[in-house]
Length: 436
Image (cartoon, rainbow, N blue to C red; front, side, top):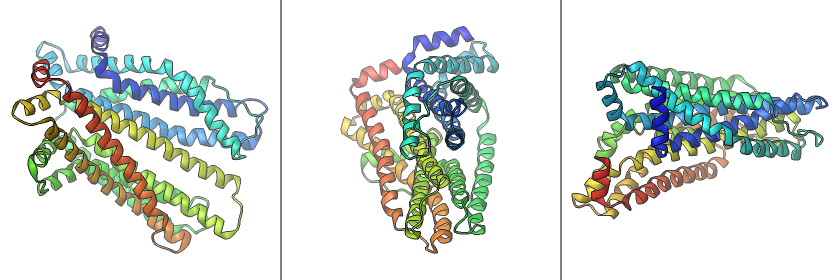
């Protein structure tokens, strides 16, 4: 099966392009922050600089590891679902489920290995950019030089390979398990995460306005709530579609397509919810904290600067990777629909109507994802603002929220419509014949 996996990757490289991109960027991210660990451990680095570098590498590196896993998992899940007929044919030919799992995992590991090697260059550039940012803010001494050592190399390769193998194993296992049992486990996990997020957000009121860890509780609460909402998003989307009045042929077809593809779109909805909630909550709370410190007339301590840098860096990393997850998932899901678009055109639909259907689907997904993410963000922002400033909703929220919504809508609509336009360049008969 491993030989078959290598032949599959070599014969159809385009199918694994999204997975390769996720592995490449994930390895570059992990190695860039791992290089801060190597730099902090060099002789001659002062204690303050070493602490700053180690803390940043540990916190953001941990988030990065999770994001790499989710990014690879989202693309592999779409890939495995699109290959349902192929995997079923292998089973009918005598392949056992264990052999199929080894084949899919082997494909993922082979693609990850290809993505790790070219990530060394971007990792060095990213590490230098991070070190320069810390030096410009006065958190790290100018005499410290970047080192890309064993921690960066081993963590980058290890995390990427393990994430790819684990995500592939879970994707093919999920595709072969019964849907009822999977849905029940997903629901229990969602409710448990929502309960934990609500407790974390409520624990904000146990802190005082000057506590250094005040932002941690609402931030983790917003993250957990966003994960819970993301897990329930497909079910909520299905309930919304039952009474959604969209007029016109494109709107009617968009609703029917979304009903049929609710489970396939779970990765897109999860990316939208996480991006909206984490970006809005973290940036807003950091703005409130900075304004409160400025109003008090005090100078920021080194710990406060470290916290601000970490928050902004985490948001930046999450934003980039969630956008990658969105682009990969939408590209894979839309490009796979070439035969569907071809049949619609043969049935009388014009390319404009097909694009209108894809646009309507993207708008509905964006609205649902942004709405759920906004609720999770508010659950963290409001308690933090009440404790820190005695207010309820800070004035910075609207501007930050609008900027986050604009990015989410641009990525979702741009990727879906751009991919659909490229797919529609293929003649309708050719698209249907090639898919058959």
